[in-house]
Length: 352
Image (cartoon, rainbow, N blue to C red):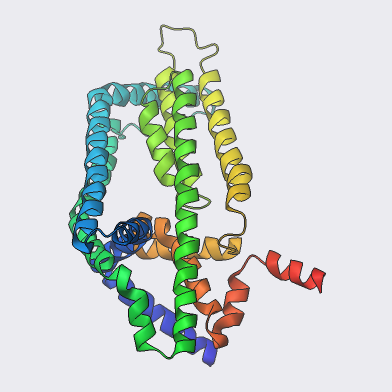
């Protein structure tokens, strides 16, 4: 009965969160940004710079980054739009070749998929992507408003806690918030460094293989690398498909060794993602979050369903915050232990 009641409560909260995503998504993005911008504001305040000036300075830096990102995005879209018709025609040619070969070998009629219009289909996907980008830009204003209010209150938060609670509870609450801030901040710094390195390596590798839009795919690898587990896979699919379309021989060319470039592209991307994600990142990050892989996966699925790609990006920091919160509440400590990776428990049992 208790388990069923808990399940209903979770379902009710998830339904409410999904209905309120228009407000909650900008709020969660601002919350995440506050862990990056908060230390800068605190540092400036300690240097005797007025709080309003410090927040305004950080806000200008955030706007500058967004502006540069917008210019980059517009440039990438324009570059792709210039080649859009060429790639649509190549896709049509590949489709016709494949259907012709199938009709000869396994008697599939060439007209089986004749109704597919690649120009129209790709256009639909681009409209969806453009809509998502426009929605994100529309939320940017709300993100900045939430971020300003969070940053204005951040330097005084610990003083309010000391006044609001008895000394013992205030100390425990401060330790919990400090632990959340430290671990999530460390996670974000390491993740940005790893994702940035991954993006640069992807850009350089695709440039050497002469795959078009290498800079675009490097940027895509950087952003999607923040999504655990499946982000690196999603980032690898577009450049591999593009290499197939780009190097597919025309009917007048010999079709000998064209597949080597897509194969090398797949091997190169797989090698970069495996090395950075499974070798370099665990060694640098260590046990900073101490989350179970199952918890990471479930958090990814749940928040991805709840808020889409933004939820997937926020899934690990939210899970880490929930774990640290449970760790500091006596009655919820078992939940924190179950959410952990188990390595710490094993080491403690072996040492005892």
